[in-house]
Length: 417
Length: 218
Image 1: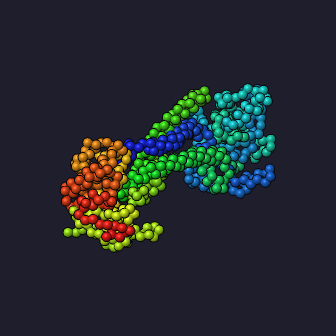
Image 2: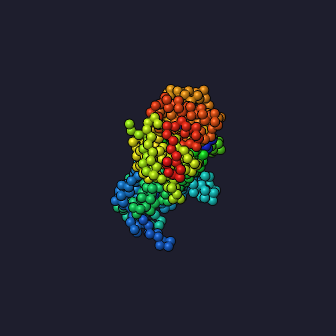
Image 3: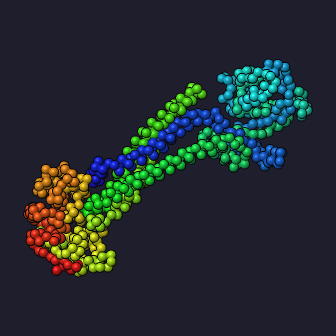
């Protein structure tokens, strides 16, 4: 029966017990408060952004061999149907969207609405599966081969135009809306740099239907079926030049990117860098929690050591009255468990308050930037559990040594002294 | 009738190799009161510690209620103390932050028993029932010893061991404490008593008086 002994210790001499509760409370409050705030920032601000960042999807190419300024794309293994199949089989990959390059020479002519005069320039075309860009298309529009040929342009290309070309040419900057619906002519079978293909020059009308991050920066992104049709007209092949890898979980994009790289492909570094940043932040958080947990354990150890030292004669009396060593140890551990639970609960409450207040302040500071941002507070049930576990764990950790020392007390010697 | 305590050839040396007890033989029947007298440092407290199971490091044989203490584990000796032995010390050894009632209840709690009327009953017998909820810090020496005796007997042990129970008490209080022990023996006729003392008033009440000098029991 340990209840009366623990109850008496807690009620008659609460000083040391309060010290343990206070230390555990502070540790748990800091860990859960900072954890709640960080988790809130992650769930409310970072995670919603992940799908918009190039994280759920990243580009790959065949392994390149660079010699000085020369880069050989096909040396060391390019992309083909078999390679795409291998990447699709990797863990964490939802889909692979191959990008095919049209081999037929071509030019584009137009731009009267934008530039004030019509221009003609060599272009190249990349064919992508509709699924790759369908999220960027206006409602009801399908990315299929037809007339006019639907074209998707790179968002970054528009940024570059607005940032460099438009100011130099003294032209107005273009919005995405202004670009959508822009029509121009494509001349197939001829280009200034590659000359004429075997076969007649054909004219087709193209229309910009959307902007997308998945569109090629330097060319026209059209349906894969269009590229296949164009190359079919001139008897040329449409090799796979790159591919977009769509991952199942954006949080794990970095790991998937590493796996793809290990499989022999060149990978866009962005998801890996962001993955490393997230892993580093998580590692730092766990490390900080562990360190603070040890600090709580050290405080608990100090308080329990004082407690055992002060109660040395009482422990000896109780041992003389018939308390076994195991029972004495259980008193201290039971006491530590109760104090740790109390500290864990109080600390979690305090941590919730800190996270709530911090989230409010942070949200107010960001109000002008993001009106739609919800208050940054996320304190899921597992955070309470973490607080209780950390509290009891650190209190128990700190009490084990002193409890064992108390249990080893020799009643005969202690009574003599 | 089996003996409560039977020591045969019990010897013990101190850490410096000095002999504390040397070939001590002792037999104590249920209901008997033995007083062990002798000068300070003669080995009285060591003898009581061995009989109480507090000290398991000795040579010879010490049977207490049929348990050989020299071979018994710490746990077995602890259980024996808890169930069969009551101990009263010269310095009382009360739990200072507890009340009178809590001090007396401790042996019952340790045994896992619910505290019933035993505590009030024994406190009435020692004249401390009115102080049941008082802290022990404010008690006089005589009152503290009464509480210690109540705590030693509340679980109705078969053996009461007392180490200089009147050593810190004035004459009047000592007499009343000895009267109390005699009265309690009358309540528990099987209770054997082993007391170490310098006090001739204690030895005068004992059935047998043994003299322990330089570790040798005479």
